Image 1 (cartoon, rainbow, N blue to C red):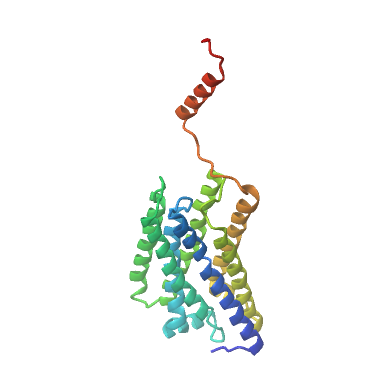
Image 2 (cartoon, helix red, strand yellow; image 1 turned 30 degrees about the vertical axis):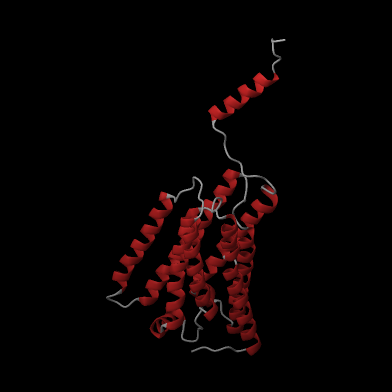
Length: 274
């Protein structure tokens, strides 16, 4: 079993890890608080939340199993080398637990608060159903051979896939509305900080061990940070540059626009009456 070569790098590793934990964990609260203050979830894409819940649940299964199960840890070392450190830290498990709870609470807010004409996307519900059905099939495949590392890697793939998909509906909603109103930018700024410090944590471990195995040995964590940072940059561009201080753009129905045009025309025309 591998250990740290430098106590200083181990401290830096823990520092980056817990900064990532607090950044990612706190990032859930601006949206929750915004929903509570407005008593409305209009502007928050429901598909984002549904996909996010599946993503964090799958990630929790991966992190907790690899961190606590000695059987899975042995399978990891057999695959990547007995001198390799386990690429999941305590802060990863803590974050996953917290993320599942807060995402579930946000889903509860969607149920009880004003939603306007927004609805749950059928496509997102189908994607979630397919993901969990595939996971269930993989459980039965792994049982005879006890391929637990392969099985949790499937959950890791699910969380990466959900990470890629979950941001797309919100990005398109912002583009369609030409506004980011109702979507908390504080969430994005903290998420960005978490992604950057997460990479820093992994790089610290690689420097200490003289190996980059933890990057591809836990490819889910690597891709999670990469995808999150890229989409966070897109959301910051939308909020601070493209749609800055713009009100929500709502399309006006043709008949209503026609009526308004007629009223304005009649008001502007001079009356024939004395």
